[in-house]
Figure: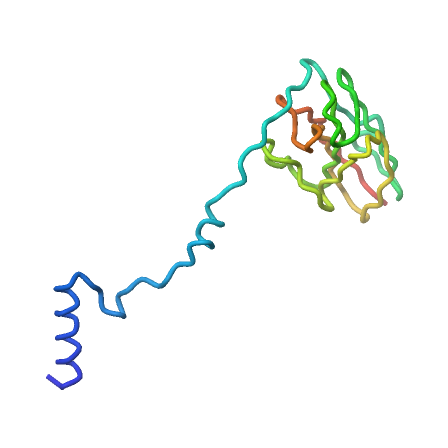
Length: 163
C-alpha cells in the first residue's frame, strides 16, 4: 500500500470507531432557514362566512364576446353588499378580477398582481386593456382582509377574445 492510502485507511478506521464520517462521506451543510422556508406554508386566515345563496357574476362582458380595447367590465352581486377593503361589515366584501389564471388558495388572502386585480375601493366596474387574443375572466369576492369567504363567492369563468 502506498503511504497515502495507508493514512486514509487509518483515518477512516479511527473516524468510524468514533462514530464520525470521513469528510468525503459527510452530508453537505444545510441552511436551516432555507429548509424551513421551503416547507413552511402561510397559516390559513380565518374566513368570513358568506350568505347562503349569494353570488357574484359578470353583467358585462358576455361569455364568448369579441371585443376591442379597452374592455368595459361590470361586476354583479346578489345577496351581499360591496364595501371597501378593510370595512368589516357583515355580509359584505369587495371584488377581485382573475385574468387568465385559476383560483388562488382559498384559505389565504388573494394575491395582488397582474392576474389578480383588487377592487378594494368598492368599485363594481372597470376598464382594462388586454393583449389581442383569447382571455379568461373570473370574479372572486374577498372579505375585509382580501380573503375569500366560506363558502367562496366565485363567478363562472368567461372567455373573451380581444381583436
